[in-house]
Image (cartoon, rainbow, N blue to C red; front, side, top):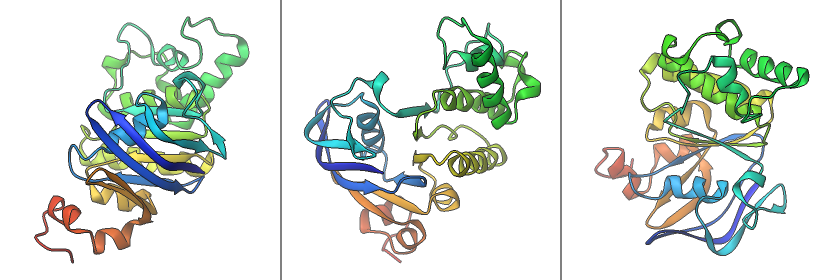
Length: 235
């Protein structure tokens, strides 16, 4: 479980208040208008935005006093940050050994991560030879290789076409279940949230609202979320 305990998150001149908990082993969407602070919530959990007050816990252990590298968190952004001169296998291996000095066991772990995202047959290709969806699969495999229980997704599939985006969402849902991950997914697409996330956090007016059932929330959204969704009044 993830818990933000009366937390005040300070991102430059912007502050976000969060007092909520997220059930472990599930996918939870983070939704709200542009600039509301959705990414701030994830960045604080990952250690890149300071906690000015309160605390953050994962599995009942306080983590906001830990450096980013020591937190039980992996994060995937829209920009996959693949290295064009490296093979798919080596790009994934960077998540395990930045110097690419791999033991036999390390290589087995890399191959396992590639198999989990259905890219084992493309391991020797360069990123330029892959589709956008395949490139994001490489980045996801690299993220999973860190073997952290919390997976943070900051709109990683926003630039993909509808078909590829649906493929990636299905993959995230499967991996969340198979690996018992606690996944937080920032998205601007309410359909994506409803597709794989049973619950959703709304970020609005400087507050992250505790999770609510996604379908219920989208059926009867608060006023500012209704405006963002293009509805003049909540339905």
